[in-house]
Image (cartoon, rainbow, N blue to C red; front, top):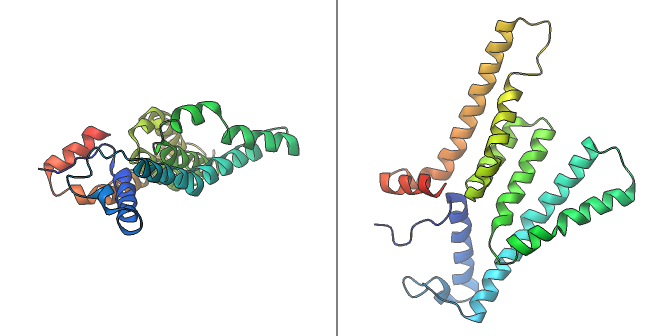
Length: 213
C-alpha cells in the first residue's frame, strides 16, 4: 500500500517532491522524515511552507497573470492608454478574492491558475496544441481546473472545425476537422501519459489519480 497517497493530481506531487528535496538538503530533514514528519507544525516549518508558496507565485503565477492581462488587453481592449494598461495589470495582481482566498491559507492554487492563464494566452495567439498542453498541466496540478474544463473543451472542439477556406467542400472541412481533432486528442493523451507514467504500473495508484481529479 502507498505510504502517503496523493492529495492532489500528479503535477502537484512532482512539485511537492522538489519542495521536499529543498527542505531536506537546505533546511531541516525532519520536515520530510518518514512517519515523523506527519503533523509537524513548528513556526520554522510554517515559514518554510509559506516561502515555497511565495516563490511559486513569483516564478509562475505573477509572470503568467501579467502576461495574460497584457495579451488580452492588446487583442481585445479598445482603450490602449498607459493608465488603463497599468490599472489592468494592478487589478490582476491585487485582485482581493485571489489574495484573501488563495493566498490566505498559503496553498499552491496559484500554480494551476497561472498555467490556466498561459493556456488562455496560447489560445488567443492561435497556438491550440500549446494551449491544450498548458491546460492539461493546470488540471493535473489542481482538480479545481475542472471548473474551466468545459469552456476549454468546447472552444478547442469549435477550433477544430472552423477557420477553413469557404471554397472547400463540407466533406473536406469535416475531414480536416476530424484530423485536427485527432491530433488534439493525441496531444492531450500524451500529456496525461507523461504525467501519469509513474503511477500506471499499479491499478490502485492509477485509480487514486482518477479519484483525485
